[in-house]
Amino acid sequence: MTIYNPTKIPEAVYDSHTHLNDDKLYFDVPAYIGRASEMKVLEMNVVGYDEKSNQRALQIAHDFASEGVRAILGFQPEDSVYFDDDAQKKLADQLADPAVIGVGETGLDWHWPEPGKDVQIASFKRHLELAKQFGLPATIHMRDSFDDIYAILKEMQINNFEMHSFAGTPQQAAKLIDLGGYISFSGLATFKNAHDVHQTVKETPLSRMLVETDAPYLAPVPKRGQANEPAFTKYVVDDLAAMIGIDRSRLADITTENAHSLWPEK
Ligand SMILES: [Zn+2]
Image 1 (cartoon, rainbow, N blue to C red):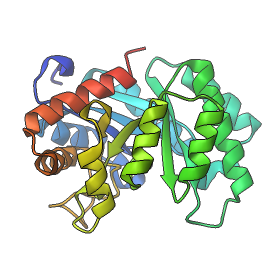
Image 2 (image 1 turned 180 degrees about the vertical axis):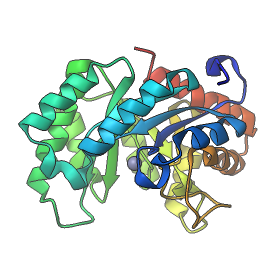
Image 3 (image 1 turned 60 degrees about the vertical axis):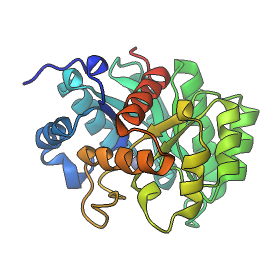
């Protein structure tokens, strides 16, 4: 297998949030990593969301550490009901692993009525406690829940986090950046009707910007509607660079540097 030093390659892209641990991609992980490297997507974070996907993310990060793959582990809001004491203990053990560079995805999702708000909030806070305890950044999923997430981050003095697949307003992004957060843009930012997100892209300081696929979901234009994969981070960078009006290689370099600042080697 090819040995890369991604930090030394200009124009390398870092997919800050992908799910090679999802059934839709898990059957052929080496091929997806190979296709990504052909598109110069040379680093990626595989993000867990429940017990099984955390286990898979950890295993992928171990198998492909020299290909720039790392793991972020947690229970997504939808699965927060399973984040009991035993699950928390197991997660804490996994977080100590050198291949695990962050906690998540966690957060609050008010789009669906279940799990209830109290369950999601309790799980979110426990994830943030772990993030503090291990000195790791949190990867946060936010949907219709800005006010509550902002209040909790502020109250718990969390200043090291990625707001993943950002879909909010420029004002919300600015407040999260003030707390110390990074804003990560996915294929969603390339959708023609996502006007708020386009505005946020234009107003977000480059030094606080990350890119991701959230594969297998949210394939960017021009692949919208197809199965998404880490290689397509390239299209997110292309589209964002055009929107901002800067060179795509510069945006690739800056977002990769930002990812290295948020997730330094352990
Ligand atoms: Zn995700």
